[in-house]
Length: 131
Image (cartoon, rainbow, N blue to C red; front, side, top):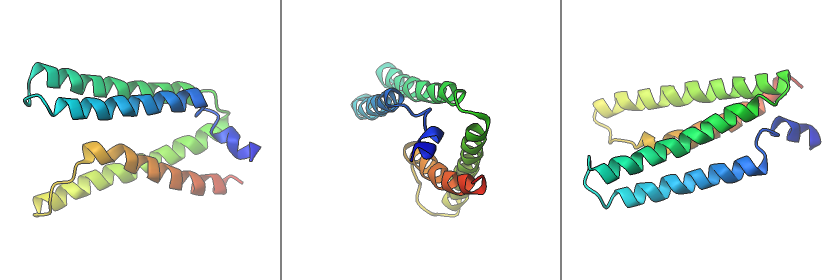
């Protein structure tokens, strides 16, 4: 277990707490924004707040990943590359299906969770390759 924990040392409790707060801010801002007209200044400001909250999480993750050793970093980055590719292909592929007549899917809501799940699965497989 200590060996596996070293791969996740960049996800310290303080960072996890910040990510959860940012997610909560994003969800709350999205609900509050629905009370305003599309394109209105308050709705645009709340959208900017959501973007800043998620952006700080991404930047925080990049900074924390720099504290990993070379092998841990390589495993994380390969897992992220797989997640990025699979999620991007899924979003683009679904766009083709939408044009063909299937219903619209809200990737703005489900893109990050999809990427996180694919990253976790990819991490398991990539880590096994280096054991």
